[in-house]
Structures are given as structure tokens and as C-alpha cells.
Length: 325
Image (cartoon, rainbow, N blue to C red; front, side, top):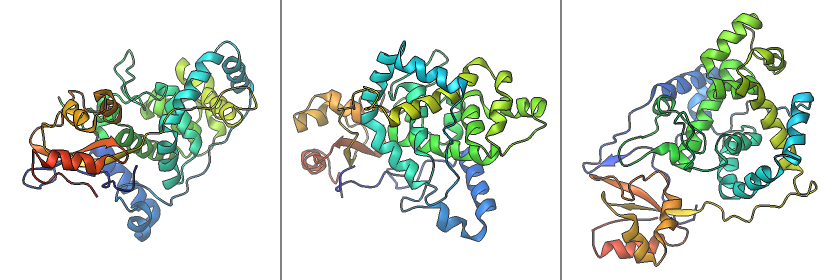
């Protein structure tokens, strides 16, 4: 984001100034888990400057183990699926800095970036045949449990910032639950209840060891069997992409200013005031599903980096007191 930005709001605010975002069940569970883990130091270590990330908490690295399953994926991504992999690398430039930055804030493995690449091709508008949506492919119930907003105006599963925060919260919780990044990633794909049942049946309920994933591999759903090997292969190849003949991404990074605007502000109106195409604002605000901010509340709109003051000046001629830091 630009230096003139407001911080991302942690709650919606109505005209009376009251917060309207309820605390979701998984958010409560995550907070309790961290407090139990960290004790009296929990608040200082779990809360960062924005008040809602797990900064400074180290929970291990993601091992990049090479075996036959991983090697098979590495071969495919360099041969029969090479064009697909190149396209993914090219698209990664838009959100890579955003996701890596949030992973670093939480001391989580940066290789988890490639989970979003596998899930959605790093497209906020991606929607699967089973109605999973966004960069991190959240289904409706999980998204609501994680506190994401979904209504007739906003679908935060499509919000690169909100959805990434929610995904990393969820992955952190899964890693703490299973004690293994491989099992956490498998549970992200198949669901934690299913992974727990498989562990009970085929691993005596054991957790806490990366090797357990490979022990139960043949008992996992087909898609999940391929999920971790593909993630490892993607991370290994991406780390050495240039040497392997892949081209770097030249996509423009996701950068913006935040401006609080009144409810009902139409994106095309703001776009005209900036002399940019409305698609520029749609790309920055893919979560606004009707091209308009929700009525009845001030809303933090993302505009092109450096253009926040111009939006404030433009809207100030129509509505009082839009603001930008």
C-alpha cells in the first residue's frame, strides 16, 4: 500500500460509529489457542500494530522433501504442464508481495504462497465447481467461521487482503492442531475432520510429525494425495525458475491507497474523477460485487496508489468528509 493509506479497518462502521463485525467462531478458537500456547505473553506476541495478526510467532518451516510423488510433479510442471506453470508464475507478481509480507509478519513459511497459486491461479475471481471462491478458495461456511463478510454487496472471499488474513489464520490454526505443515495443508484441502478420522484409522491418532503425512498418503482422497507433493514441487521450481528457463512476472504489484467513502459510492463515478477505466477500481476491489460500496456505512475503498488525495478532493465536492491519511 501507499504511505498515504489508512490502515485496513478491522471492523465495519455504521453511521452511528458502532462496529458491526461480529467475532467469528474460528477467530475465537484461534485466539484461545494462542493464549493457551503463549500464556501471559499472548496479547503482546499475537497482536501486531494492526491488532489482528500473529506477528513474531515462529511455528516452523515447511520442509521441501523430494520423493517420487514430488519428482513426478516437478517433471509434469516442466514438460506437459509447462505453459500452465509459466502462466502461474506470470500471474504471481500481482499478489506475491502482499502474501509474502503477511507470511513474514506471522513467521509462517513463505512457501505457503504457492498454496494460493495451486488453489486459484492467484485469481481473486476464481470460483470452483463446488462454489469455493477467491484466491484461497473458501467455501461459504468456512469463510463465515473465519469472519469474512458475505452479503449482497461484498464477498470478502474475493478480497485479496481479507481473504489472505483469513487463510493464514486458518492455516496457523491447522498447524497448531496437527503439529505438522504437511497435515495442515492436507486438512486445508480435505477438511480437518476428515484428516483426523484418517489419522485415527491409519496412524493411531498420531500428529506432530511431517512423516505421518507420507504414512497415510494412500488413504487420503485423491486430490489431497496430490496436494502436498504439488505444493512442494511448485515451491522448488519457483525458487529456481529462471535457471530452468521460466520467465519472471512483469505484472504490476497490488498497491493502493485507502479512502473512506460514503455508502452507495459507485466505482465508475470514482473512476471518472481519476480519469481511469472502471476496471482499474474493480481490480483493486474485486470483493465489491455490485460496483458500489455498501449503503448505510462508510467504506474503505481502494484506489490506485498515489491517487487517494485526488479522490478525497473529488468526493469532497459532493459529500462531506471523505478522508485519507
